[in-house]
Image 1 (cartoon, rainbow, N blue to C red):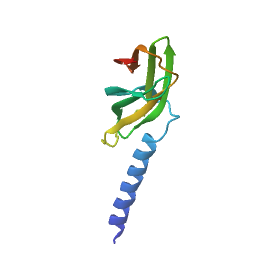
Image 2 (cartoon, rainbow, N blue to C red):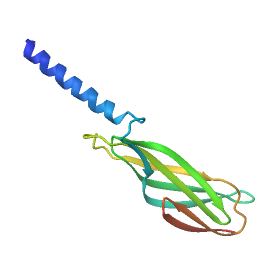
Image 3 (tube, helix red, strand yellow):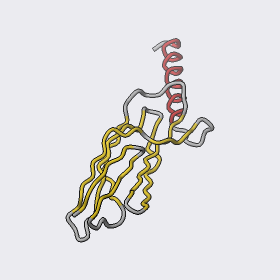
Length: 130
């Protein structure tokens, strides 16, 4: 391999490392946290006494500069709110691979007979227990 080939390979490796570092720096000023996109929410009632529930959630976290940040849950009366957040680094170039979210989330608490509302990042589902 001649000097020119080695220089070209070194430059490419440095460029690749810089691009990856830009996408993996969660503490930088260009990092932000926001809700992920949700495509589908289903509720499964567990056969227990009193019944429990699980949310099956499908969505889109983002591209190669995005990662799952947190899943938070709150309940007020018969309304359960789940917030799924991503961390994204603003970068000039990111790997264009879709990072999908497909998880079962156990819903906290018990669900005695009644009608309930589940909200996941703005997507709403009503479910009923007997």
